[in-house]
Each structure stands twice: as structure tokens, then as C-alpha cells.
Image 1: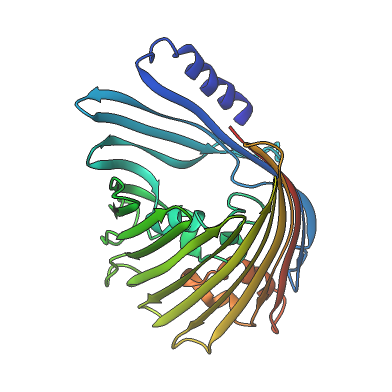
Image 2: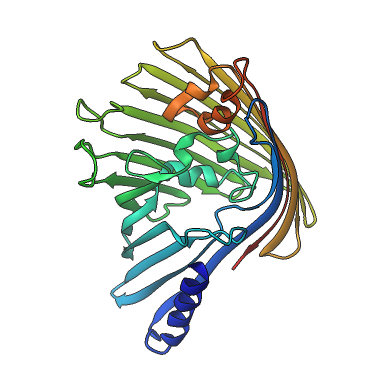
Length: 352
């Protein structure tokens, strides 16, 4: 399907070039292909070596000058997989339209939350086979899509303020669809400051859950940032959340550092999480990642890295709030003692 859809999309964009001469339209995309070797304790056959296409995408973004400092803006982004011939086709990513001006920007559609956006700023391996949100260095609130505080929020409006000397505000509000049984509208806000080698941010969000929501009320907040001095950078964040239905709290923190030498970047990161509640005893997990990246150009790079997560026996029950819900659930399928989920990856990434 993708072989039919992609040429059609690109053809339409090129053929329509003259018609949109007054608009600024850009074809954009991302290809990340790697060979990955996974070793999962008790994973019941999940140990394997494969080619992986991590969040590969293609799309369009643009704007039109409406006069008086006002612009119409849009983005249409679609995900695909280069490694699977039977891939079901394009999957929706951020897709929105709205207005931008001196007041900032307001867009409506499927949009990454501020919570997720800030996390991407401190992960140099973002959208690779070693990205932190998939391997325990960031919580599950940075991943997936939906209308219950997933990283990419459906049916959502988002506002981003202009920059006031590096200070920016962001907020989102999600409307429930007719496909679920609850009538709770998630929302959240964030603030960031970026100036020179300093990045600092904070974010809070809630699903506004009540008796009609099977998950009850879920809330999460985080603070974090990055400090860069010449070739050296340190980064990290602390996350805290609560799930009312199970009376579960979770705590997650990450610290990482990178060093740049010419076109090469060395990276090391460590993350730890704990979830405790009235269902089971405390559940803990830790992760670390080491990697090297060589930038062949501004848009093309190659990388090699190792990541591992050490999960308690109850790690799979970290649940919606836990950053290790996916990596530890694979371990727990066949291991009552917990164990490790380890990946070695060699990949190439190109942005266009």
C-alpha cells in the first residue's frame, strides 16, 4: 500500500507547486534503519536480530501569509516501515492546522503534547532504535497516540506562545471522541526557557478522569533541562505521577551526558523508576544506554549503541504510569524473578 500512496502524495505536492506559489510548502521526512539484536530474559522467543525502521515518516508542512502578521499553518505527517513488505501502510502522526501570529500559534488536530515535546529536546537518540522513551529513560507519556495523555494527543487543540527572551508557554486541551464511555477531557500546560547553552522546562497534565473513566484520574508532572558548555552537555528530568483507581504513584528520573568531538558525539544515559500502590509491593526498574553517533552531514548520521533495562519481578505491572511498562512486560512473560531487556543497535538516520 505504501508503494502506491507515497508516489501519489509526492506527485500531488509537485503538481500543485504552481497552484500554491503564494504558500510555503515543504516536503519533510525521516528514515532511520538499523540492525538490532535483542536479548530478553524469559521473553519466550523474543530474542532476535532484525532490521528496524524507527518512526520513519514522510509528510508536508507549510504556511500561508494572510496579511497583518497572520499566517495559516499546517502539518501532515505519516509513518511507514521500510523493512516490512506487508506493512499495513501509512500511520497517522502529527496532523494539524491552525493560525500563527504575534500572539503565538494555535493549532487543532493530532498533536504532540508539551510533555512529550520537552522530552525530545534532551534525547540526542530521539527517533532512533535506541531512543530513551522506548528503553526506560523516559516515561510512557512520551509515547503512543490517543486521547488519554498519550504522547501524541488526538482530537486536541494546542497553544504555543511567542518567545519572550527565551521564555515560552504551551498548553493543550483534548476533547473525548464518541468511541469511549467517559466524558473526561484531558488537558495540560508547560513552560520552557531556552537561552544560549541553557534549557529548562516544566510540564503538568491530567486526564480529568472521574467515575466515568475506567482508569480514574491520572496526573503527571515533570521538571528537567539541559546545560551545554562548549562540547560537553548534561541533561535530565524528574517525573512524578498518580493513578487514582489503583492508588499508584510513580517516580522516574533520568540523567545523561554527551560529548562532541568534531562530527562525533558520545552519549551515556541512566534512568530509574519506581511505582508503588495498594495492589502490589513496590516495583522498581533501572536502565542505561551508551552510544556513539557520527554525523556524516547535517542530515545523515550513523550510530552504534547498547541499552539495557533491569526489571523487578513486578515490573510489568508498572502500568500506564510506568516508563518500563513495555520493556519490562516482555521480560515478565516467562520470568518470575524479573530480568534484563537488552538491545544492541547499529543504524543510519537521514532527515529531509
